[in-house]
Length: 192
Image (cartoon, rainbow, N blue to C red; front, side):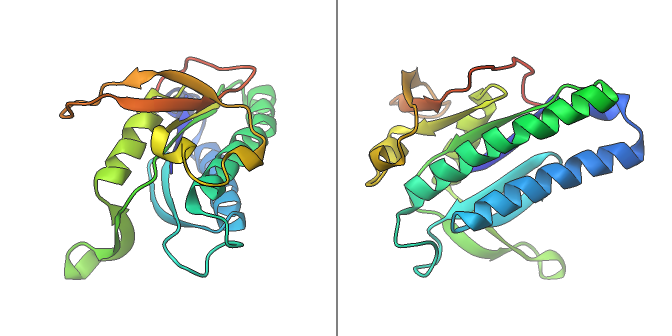
């Protein structure tokens, strides 16, 4: 699962350093909390983006698969951010949102990097596809692949899901089936 704050570049230009740090810390805390609560593992925080993985450990979660856990976490992050975003807008005049991309498949997980700076992360095609979906997501929505939609237990979540036109990903011959957890209010703030 890729999570990215929309409107961060503009917000960071409007806020002082202390407020930028407070904005990021609140956002990171929310994403990490909802990821952990749904049996996932935060892997990376870069700029205003967070990469999390679900299903890395057999003991994670309640026996529910990684697809439903990631989708539930995404819905919870989007819903919870609404109050934070409204507060930041009221107090500081900044408009932010969150876009999320989720894909299900094999990943390479573990410590990666030179000996002087190794850290646990996930990489691979699954991660790349989640990143592409996140890039396309507007503020307030999560985009996810057919693989997530087809995962056992997805319908039991009772979430509103919309099928979208397939996404042509650069370097791939076949378009990717794509779905959306919609939001009543979406902002076209772009990815930054």
